[in-house]
Length: 375
Image 1 (cartoon, rainbow, N blue to C red):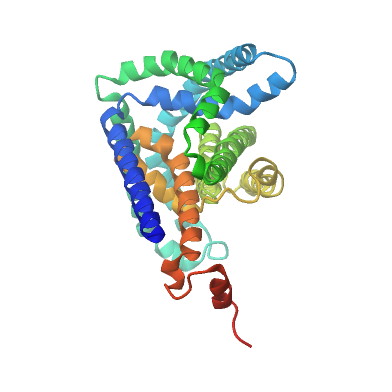
Image 2: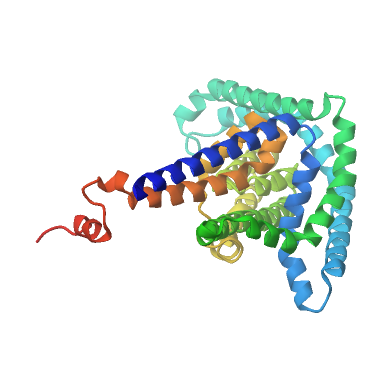
């Protein structure tokens, strides 16, 4: 009888959480066009909550700490938007215009280089290389054009920009101000029989999200600034654009550095060859960046692991982006972290359940015996 009640309670919990999941997905589908400023505000508040807690420890009230943090954040963001965005847009437009010329010059470089430097089979594939590069560039341009088209083609583009500039700081302010109270209120709603388990799961999800968003986000910003400044000082054309792009996608291990290295070295060969020194300096910028990332920044900012496998992360970005658009890209990492923690929890429970051991091993003693091989 007790086993039946337990199974009935388990079924009720499964049904309840499935209904909640369906409602959340339906909510995202229905309101995805207006969720951007609210999700951005929540992300900013989550990112800045540790700073607010430290200011409170120094004696500031929560209200004053929130005001100081958001004022500084908005000023820094506005300054970066005013100074950086025009330069990035200008370099991006010039880069798009110069791509065909760079591809042609790179083909000529391959054809004219001596066999002692470039093997014959590479030179013999120069035509195929050009076609492949052209295809890759056209596909990339099509993706970028489609992305910007989705952002700008609709009549809601201006509304989205205004809402980001106006609504996001307001949402961030109120959520950051009431963060601790909201957490306490949600904690009070948890069924008392499951409060310890739910708190443990929530703690693991918070660790995964915080380690990735706060740690990896800071890492991407630092690497983007380093690569952008380093390549610009070397004198590489579009160095700032390539460096910022490489840093921005560094949250996917190895992808950011490899893509940035490929773009930077390709342009450096066309721009500087046969001056080996400057090509070597471009390589040195990326090798130094990889050393700093792997030995200093990654251990300090992110830690050994945040529980997000690179393949799972890329799948989440593609899946949520396809389902919910740009909003899906914003929630992909937190959702992937939460799903990863929940899957590991479900797997651990399964490995301790009768479904795994069978009905013959129903008690802890029999399970221990089942695990221990006979001598």
